[in-house]
Image (cartoon, rainbow, N blue to C red):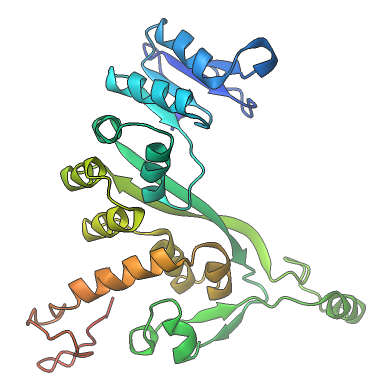
Length: 286
């Protein structure tokens, strides 16, 4: 993101702990708390140098959060990170730090949440079709997933790995772990007029998330399930990393709302109907 903004004429400054990558043309400052150089103090120093873009490695306390918000309100593009479960949780986190809701809603452009899931090994993965009960745990229906090929990781125990190695049939790509490398899962929430109103009202994380989904946000859960459908990862990995009660509830609410209009013939449906009686299309088809 900084690399895209990095060109002559753009003043970019970062406060990091630690500095992990050297970025030519960007002013990077290492946090040294023993000398009083924390995020908040460095950020205040940046503001005296007329920066265009500021990166604050992590917002950990009220002082840093307040300075970040004030910098954004004065026309600077400010990037920072927070430890939260999802995008909507960042708003509530700032609120708990003591930041006034109107300052959050007035300065926020958007929030990106991300996770990493393991890629299922393409050399030894096992194709299967989950049971109806297993699919239901993720808010999926068997009728809508009939054409999808699901995969399980061929994960071996230590004894099985030793045996496979002796027999010469151990997977050379994943060495029996069932997974190889990782792939990103993303959730992007834009600050719309409706989201601003909810922030100013002190709405809960679930309510903000529901509104964002209504406006088209793809949740971490929905994104990771799409990766499952495309064969990149497994339902087990989704359950381990992105399946949460709030995420599932947001998806189910969105499906119930969108499911009242048939995606095939556009007929109005009743909430209790699982299929459209006019064209027989499954109500929750993708």
